[in-house]
Length: 115
Image (cartoon, rainbow, N blue to C red):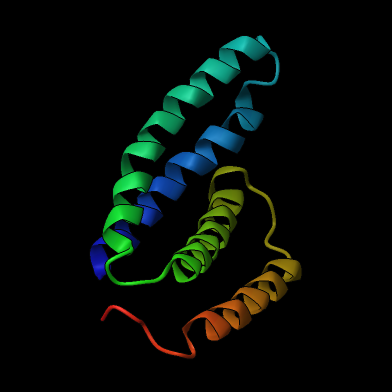
């Protein structure tokens, strides 16, 4: 059950850099270059994301997988924003996290169906 979670964290690292990493130092670069670079990074995200979901579906239902993905996305994004982009963490991240905890509660309150 841990393997899909690790793969999701790693895929989110690639996804976050593909979507936002270019904003730090590449604003003057041609858009087509940034798009191609982002696609290249996203390729590695998919190499991790697809197996994570294929493995994860044996432990979680589809909705649970999606909520897990969103929780991981927020955690990875907050770390990325703070450590890489040097953006201050805002209280809104905490509130968004609380909403995701609520979503996780509703998705998992019936238990994990395949475990």
